[in-house]
Image 1 (cartoon, one colour):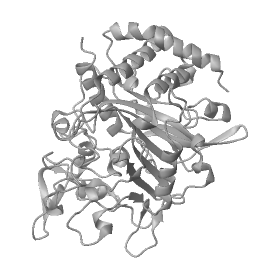
Image 2 (cartoon, one colour):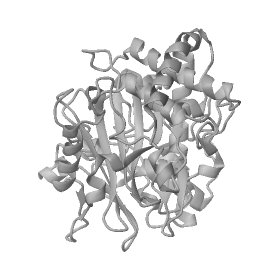
Image 3 (tube, helix red, strand yellow):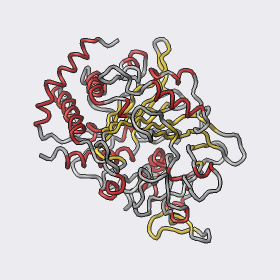
Image 4 (cartoon, helix red, strand yellow):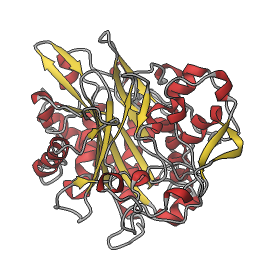
Length: 465
């Protein structure tokens, strides 16, 4: 168990160094903004992680309140986290007793972002600029001296908007305090001889082999000063039905702090012209290898259309299906042939239902496009593609295309040791337990690209002086 004096000491360290960190002109690098913890291999390592019972706000309340956690469980149990294929029985997320205990969910990864859903000027113009701290949390079940990492995950989003602004404007003073504390953690690593600048994006260098003792407790203390359930704005869960399929379901808090989370219809599926509620309000998407491999439901995405709509301001996704132009990863499931890789990408249909193809983009270019945060984000691309673009790129050994994200200079790239390779791996940040029980730390190329974009924007806007 961690000692209370260690937390007090950490808090004192953060306070004493904050003014120094604020005065520095140090820039962030990839590992400063995206943190990946080593997967635990035993009970002691599992206990050393930050769990959702352990992480509390400054007022002593859980940063995921009892109500918020119960809302997530209720949404799963309601059937919203289920997907049917034709007339077949629904596939649904199944949570056993261990997964219903908040304390079994541990932080596998953390991200600091200055502007969600993206930092590009066009995205900020349409959606606003929303600073966030986001977690990838996964269940770790301790049994005696051993532990088991489950292939489930939750995406937990804490937001820092300027009150009363729509579209969101950033609460810059609050976010600057977060960056001050990130710089404190960066300095602590440097003082211990562990440099985050220049380190490839993988397991955080200060956490690897416990290179900087007490660093996880420092992170926990930092988060305590910034997080509260009132800041919790979105949740998403990825869960299994047996060994597979993998099912994704988002939740939102449309009425604001202190209110209930509700299932958030996935924007790209929300079809106001549909005659039935199921197609008006699809709430989950899955990847399955049972029978023909497929992403279901397949989406007619909108990531090649102008960014002129804003689902945060409108009542759902308002672009009619026939007007949507975009690509997804559905063409890669089942496995795509070499000839089809070189075919031009289908981007929509015309008024007569005939396919429309992109003049330049080929199917083999789609993973690069999906991984490009300047074009694709939650509101114009469905859930599963962002979790599988890397594994499909690796499977087919696809060369970099002209649609790939242009990496900002001076920012460290992805560590090849954490690439998402296995076809069963849908972790874009976190831990992947394979069928043999081995657990792999994983970061997808999409996550690496988002990190580079966020770091570049943070350095330019907040740390340029």
